[in-house]
Length: 130
Image (cartoon, rainbow, N blue to C red; front, side):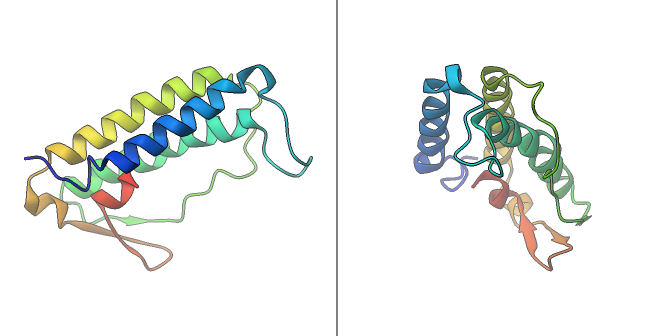
């Protein structure tokens, strides 16, 4: 069953625009507006890491009916300097596609399942697609 929310063209369009923007500056992937800010390389690696290590796992566990509890997810302080921007974007696109396809294939009753977080937020699968 298809779910308009999971396949919202705005979500997909935003991801594609962000990828195109980051790809266009791949030659300058280590540029930073300020030394305290992340470089483009770090931004791309962050996107790939969050989707892979956080959102994909959360969607799988919620849709399995575990009613899990999740600690807050942070990947600040990580060293992403070994990841090429183009590799991170490829990984992000692949994982993002998996997440959207997984949520898109869920029956309505699975979309209503939820998890709880350390921040006292009730999390549902569709929220991982935003």
